[in-house]
Length: 212
Image (cartoon, rainbow, N blue to C red; front, top):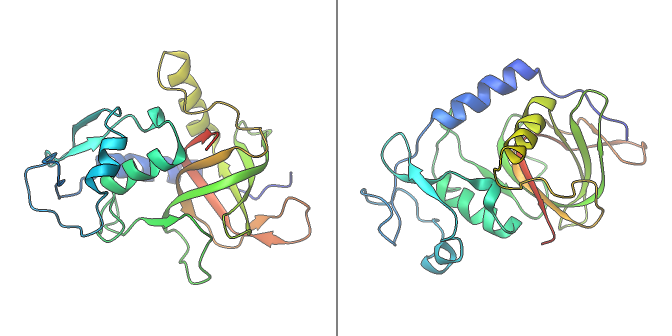
């Protein structure tokens, strides 16, 4: 796999730290929080019941947040947890921007440096010489996206699993499995798997792979 150079690791690490420190006001219809909801697109009661097995802890503003995302049993479960933590219609995170959920394809108008949740099917996945992992993903609309998770994040996930944490990474090399996670959109600067052109690139901050 030909890969594109990911953004500066120090920049991405600083960005992730700010993301983890940022909170978002709101509440749940299931009374998981204390304030009136700022979002009209929070997960439904039924969706929240589906992921009741996932743990929560108070965020910076006291609002319960799903804190063990690697425990998600499916990419759909991870998406629900992310939509609770970062509703798509409410600004939040380090730069007070909306999270964009890319569950079909990537809009041509999507700005670079957008925070995204990405969901695709693994066409090819491999470890890179830098220690990072790279994937060619097939999006639900059939388009191709390159995703790269920097070595620091990948090693952090592996270390957490070795210490008894949730198995976020299971078979990241297996064609046909789903890969999903949180990342930063870098524009059409990635390399297609067959090397014939450029495709959208996402720098992944956290990912899981699941059978569905």
